[in-house]
Image (cartoon, rainbow, N blue to C red; front, top):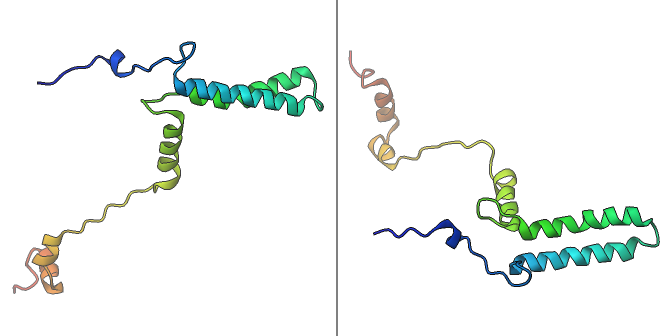
Length: 124
């Protein structure tokens, strides 16, 4: 007997702080740290409006990693799957059969040639 578990229960994540999961909380803190660090790093060199946009752009990747889910994969799992499929795997798959039965059955070249021609080359 197969037991069906509702999707809502399978995808349950425990909220730790303000409704955020542990992963979301850590990534949000990293985003906050990146924004504050960029602000103090760039405050002597640029104006407030430019620094605000730079802080948003610097914090966005960290915040995105905490909330990103695609087909049940987190951002790191998705990035690794993409790297494996696009960069590490071959583009063209070549099929090469290695039939042990065929090799044992037609072990000599003469038998192999006879098999290809249908056994007609030896008859007169």
